[in-house]
Image (cartoon, rainbow, N blue to C red; front, top):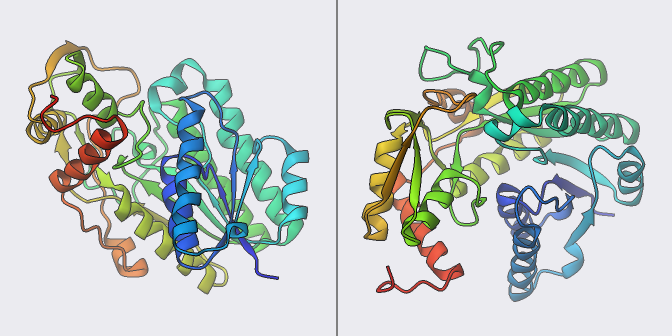
Length: 336
């Protein structure tokens, strides 16, 4: 029997893109998602519906994808899942996401991101699943002064509960690699954007506000910088990581997946204005607790070991995102 790749959080932004890519390359996928109300769960259901429509057009059998609604914290549910489906590899994307929300709900973030991850690692141990890819975050670098951020940099000064839980996940992964010989890669994602981006993230949120003639919350003086990474480049990096993990024995590595170029908040808004063809209304607000001044990935290691090579310039990625946004919201070119 062909084994499945389990994608936790597989109905979300990154997860749904990854699921589609895996199905198109011939893999069988189990999508696990709890469809919580962090944002409208119908968006996630729509993501999966679009995948099923796409694979039907390509003649991919519908039983190549299995969708399970469940919670990574629920050991009984996870046990049933691992017992029901032969899993060859886990890509663990499910998490409570976001720096600012984690400050107001640290116990929830701890429960999902740490206990949930530990639960999955325990299931892998129990069922002999030796391959694991963990989605970490650039937030683990905190306010490190040295840039670009490299995987060997000191990461023990997080500035949000979210960042702390992601670092804890990396440490748990290393522990299970050491104790049980699991092949594990931890991927530090840098500000992922593109079609299907979550509505709470800045580019999506700002786009909606510009189209609606509403004020953009502009935190700080606009000099904060982010290493924005287009979704297709991230998925290419994840797929290359899956191949690396599957080919190895006794492997544990951490990889940065970013664009290795920074864009300031001012530049980001200016690019949105240019592509949309409309000026933003700016509301200047103080910097928020937990926010960092910059993120900037050194991707040398991923380039060398994985063959990772991001190919999408920021403005080109924004054009793709705005085209998608217009389509899903039925906004014509003249209706701005």
